[in-house]
Image (cartoon, rainbow, N blue to C red):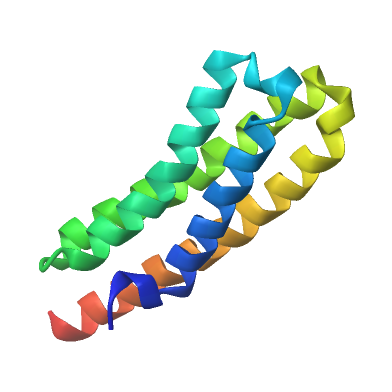
Length: 122
């Protein structure tokens, strides 16, 4: 199994693709700070899942998974900025937030699974 096989990573990849699609739209694309921040949060979720998966020590693995989980929350928070400041993109922000929530739930499940394995191997 590779990190690409993780459902959470696949969902994070999809989320990141969606973020880049939304942030390419003219009106939002000019908000460089917002675009950069939400893009980095999406990439962080995806990358930390990959890096965590490759770690040999469970504690390190969990640390990276927790960062990935927090990054999905950051994406969710930033979708409110889009929704509040770019009303024409509000529907896209809501959809993006739903996908970030789903990704976060998968990552949370991965964290719980990893923690349960830690306690059985200790």
